Image (cartoon, rainbow, N blue to C red; front, side, top):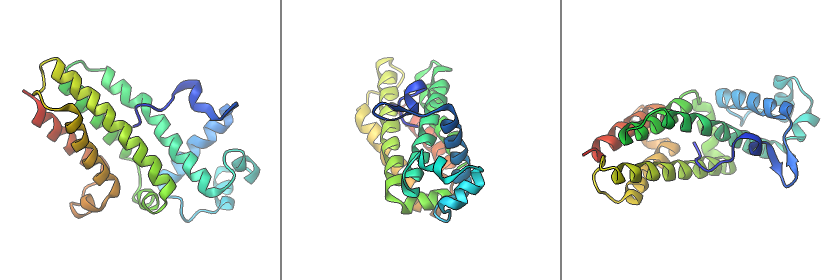
Length: 204
């Protein structure tokens, strides 16, 4: 979802001078599958090691504690989203289609996230901050797409930054979950509705 997150070899970087091995990246991806399906608050490191069929030493090579491991897993989830978002945008040309493609790609990517994961995310500030940071980056990408549509004469001449801020505000409400829980909507369904609303409001 983040537009500015490194991809390719750079995503393997753990820190200055450190890169993830292929096995570590595979393990992170499997941890993403586990935690996005079942949440993470109830797991101990022993539980995670058992589920991943690896040693705790292997997990400690990814992060020095369970809280830091969770943050690494959430970061990995969003790193993996970038190519999918941009592939969706690149597949279409019309500005309205590009905005719709981006937001629907976000919706599709968020669809598998379980309620357990989202609830755990909401109560664990470091992981929630990762989500927030990537939501901001996604809103910035929407701003650029709106600006492209205005420049092409396909969108009304609104303030692209303001429109993106309105989108971002809705995205943050989606992240919080309270409003859409009342509406009985998933995050994915909310992004689908947001795409329809934004394009409908902007199209000339």
